[in-house]
Length: 228
Figure 1 (cartoon, rainbow, N blue to C red):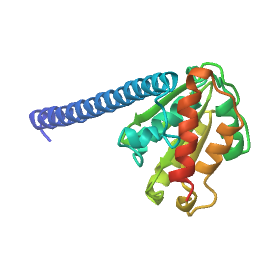
Figure 2 (cartoon, rainbow, N blue to C red; figure 1 turned 180 degrees about the vertical axis):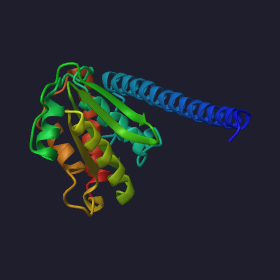
Figure 3 (cartoon, helix red, strand yellow; figure 1 turned 30 degrees about the horizontal axis):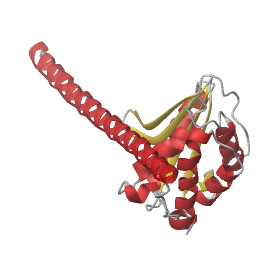
């Protein structure tokens, strides 16, 4: 191969990589924008509910924030809320209690440390996109959330490979699936948590007063839509 031809092919590869990176950046920005819009919409909706309660106009006892937002079966919305609950630094008032109980029920162990934990919904790594990525000090938990779809075998394999690479670097890493009971992974060796278990964890905890409404609505939504 001549130097000219090699240089031409290298430039073509470089352009291709730039296009891939640009597309991933745009996709990441769009996902963050949609998550931010959902968060703002939920906050406004809860404020309206609170005002209605204070004024005596609130009557509907089956309020479902996911129905109101048009996302009763959208995995992104559910993943965003689960990521919020798993993050000890968020304003739900649960600190690391939900994270600890989530890992205890799904993995049979608690996190090695909950200091400086970062939780990212829709986390991208290479060609993979994790619904929730929880990173602590030399440990990591990948959470795959399935509301209607069943887990895919090839997807499980790729996520397990990601965890194995971290383990080879001396870190602890786990893959956990969260699904409706009817959508449990066929591979019983995969750590798994049903939405019913998520609800039971939430019922055992006391959130901050400002977060009580949305967490209570989430529990009701699980009972109505996600326990079959």
